[in-house]
Structures are given as C-alpha cells and as structure tokens.
Image 1 (cartoon, one colour):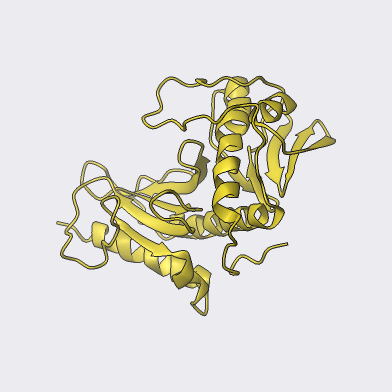
Image 2: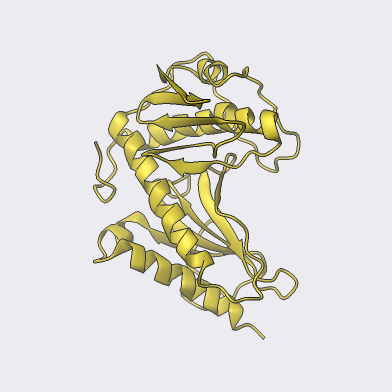
Length: 242
C-alpha cells in the first residue's frame, strides 16, 4: 500500500486517467440517475458516491465496491462498460448535457490499467484534500457564501467555493490529483474574478490563480497546516479587496 507522501511512481498518471474514466462514466452517472446529483466524495482509501438510496458505489485500490442495503459486492476493475454495469447502470457516453468541459471517453471495452499503490495514493490524496477543505470552510467569515466540499466528475478534483461573487471575492479552493498541465497532485486557489499577477502568490501558469504542488507539501513538516495556510493566504487576499 502507498504512503501519501511517497513520490508517485511511473504508473501514477495512467492510473489517475483511468480512474477518472470510472468516476465520470460509472460512479457519477449511478448517483445522478438515481437522485439527480453527481458529486463524489472521498471514501475508505478511495473515492465514490456519498450514500444515496441505501447505496454507495466506490473504488478502493483495484476493486469496484458496491454497498447496497447492507450487502457488499466487489469486482476487479476491467473496463468502463463493466464498471457502469456493476453499479447498476449502463455505459452512456453523454449522460449530462450541460458540462462545459466533459471528459473524452476511452473505448468503453478497452482494458483499464489501474495500479494498486497508485490508486491508493489517489484515494489518500482525496481524503487529505477533503480534510483540509473542510477545515477551510470553518475559517471563513460569517457572511461568506460557502459551498459543500465535493469531487466534480469532469475535473476529478475535490473543491469548495468561498466568498461573495458580487463583490469579486469568490474563489474555488481545491485539491487535484494532477492533470495534463501539472502531472503530480497539487492544491489550488482559482478566483472567479481578475487577479493581480504582480503578486507572486498568483503563480499558476495554466489558469488565473495559485498552486502549491505535491513536492512542496511532501517536504513540509506539517502538510495539512501548510495546505490550510496556502488556502487562507489566497482567501485573505480576496477578502481584503476594496
């Protein structure tokens, strides 16, 4: 099993990309088709749906896990289509029409490559991200408009939003397991309005915001404290705007 702060192996990127396929085309549709909500959550060493209608659909390591009414079934990860069917649905390439940037599908019958240690690392990363983001929500001002912490299937990251949009002080705060622009995990602050790029805090190259990467967190004495401090630094910059 992986340790969260052990450098990701060469299998990490492929594992992340293939788990993203499961999140987007199997897990989120299962919840959405049942209750009209698609957000996912950190689960035991993995990720999946919050409980809905007595069920939890999730990934743990290389296993699909389906909890329903006190019963637990497991199945080895194989293909996207098999995952969708295991969770009680069917593979549908377009299951929600209003995504701005939906995930492009692999061949639903191609074998998914998921390394156990890399999968556990991703699950542990999401648990870390959810924990810090919940701490952040408790540090906002009384007049903040604060959203719940959840994982968005199209982005495959944990996020919450804080602050007033009308006042130009709102931002998304999140924890990503990586993407084509930044291969390893990172946390970020993404304001919904313009930022002052002369301020070195706003260092993101691929969007208007700030990032703190995995290596910096892993090298700190207290990664959770470091992550929370990073989020609060962005929050305070936005909060202090005139």
